[in-house]
Image (cartoon, rainbow, N blue to C red; front, side):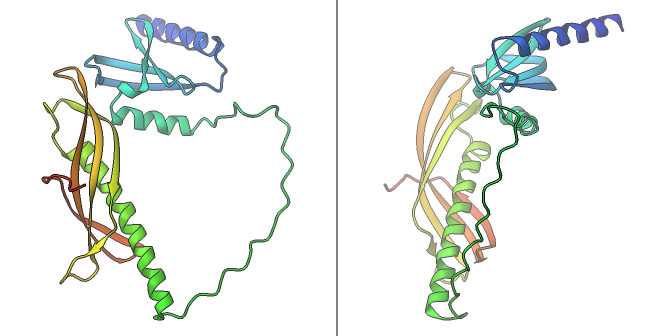
Length: 233
């Protein structure tokens, strides 16, 4: 019990030092997150890691190791850690841009303009607007699915890798003949990853095909994500 109280006292003193350091209180978000094991992107392994703070100005995560507080770049941490930190940061609004605590004057309220008249249902104009809305929804869904596939479902390099960045360049959705409401979206995924076995950062590109079903813009479902082909662009 004494050791536990001593550790808590030490943690409190160190956190107080962080807040009063040459950082503003708005930069530091206090954390109380513990993980049994964290594999960092640089190959380092943190055992029984206690994450105590996050500096959103320098993007550093502070970890208690052997009663010493050590900063690590947030980019080294896996997604299950950064997602919890992002949720905690959302609880601390960034007020660094405010000058004082005086309430701002409310802007004058301007009534919104009346909506434009809608084309009759089934008219050529209505059909064109609906097709454009479906194409936009399908493209957005396909881009998200492609990035998620490369980040979580595809084995890259030695398999002990962490995807550090990714971009998608997709073409327009193409209706699939013989299947109503189904579309094919093709493009290229550009991604970077860190391989902890070789301790190297690498860049890759891979063609991707996403099959999507979309009866309407609000009902879009990804059916397949295929990557075993070479980009044609």
